[in-house]
Image 1 (cartoon, rainbow, N blue to C red):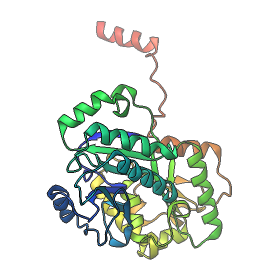
Image 2: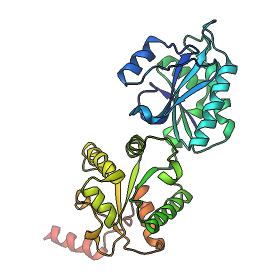
Image 3: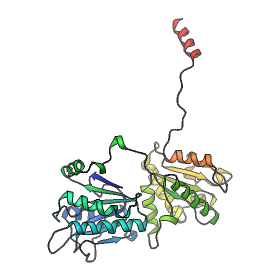
Image 4: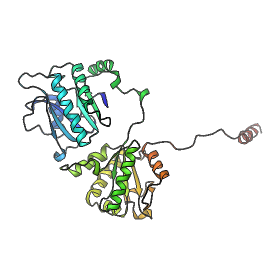
Amino acid sequence: MIKLTHGSIFDKKCDLLIIPCNSAGGMTKWVFSNLKENGIPLPDRYIPFGKVLFVGTGLHFEHAEVIAFAASVETETNLSSKKAIGSIGKEIASYCKQQVLRQVNIPLLGSGSGRLSEHESFEALVKSLNSTEDKEVIYEIFTPSLSVYDNLRAAYPDFVEKKEDKKPTNPRVFVSYAGDDQVNAKWVKELAINLRQNGVDARLDKFHLKPGTDLPQWMTNELIMADKVILVCDYSYMIKADVRKGGVGWETMIIQGDMLTQGETRNKYIAIVRENEIDKGLPIYMKSKLAFHWKKQDKMIDDDFKELLFAIFDCDIAPDIGAIPEFITKKMSNKTLS
């Protein structure tokens, strides 16, 4: 899906952040200042015109899981082209499919110093990004200029989200668990598969963690970007969370910090306790929260799973309020008259 947005590529977290540059790695002052502010180093090599240099999370960049420098301007001519932008778009789409990335922030490549019009840039990006037909990826094309945004919105209304057209979206849900128990790990994998089959973008290390990825940074990005986080709690998970051990311990520190920013009105974190006694599986920091108690069952009960989906989609499951009974209204009327 492609969305047109007014703003900066640095305004929101994403899986993949596309940074515009020329083939020598040079960039505008505005881009350079944002890189410096966000702690992103400059590219250290020549990037062929129309190509992309992808940089993984080894840099501990907190804004995205992966950053990429797109050589959208040719150094010698200081010009861009629709062909180059199309080549960049296809490379981005292919990379997202291989790495199972969902949210991508992209500027209007080549429309600044490259002298392409905003319409030429947008059309080239739309055509190339749609090349993989991967409907799960959200490509958000940003333009800081309000006048440019208004022009594109008028010309391409289908890429602007309208309030009246809003439909339920696929919530992004990170699944946290202790992987030392193979039986539990298999159960968690089946849970994630079932969630994905029911419209939930369940994020699991077995699906989305790639070799060479910086594990703590990947977990941090997933936790922060998630709409909901499911904590599959058993005795092993509880102990690791309470003593801050391993990956669960790292996630616990991030979760507690995130909870402070969420406040009491948010229900981002959902605990599922897989122990026969709830106190044998719930970490200390979650004991004040309402949790699902599914015990050590091998298979998920349909009603339990449905209740979990209601929580993920924030559905109001309270029955509708009916009419006040006639005997109550009569009683109240008599009381008023007296």
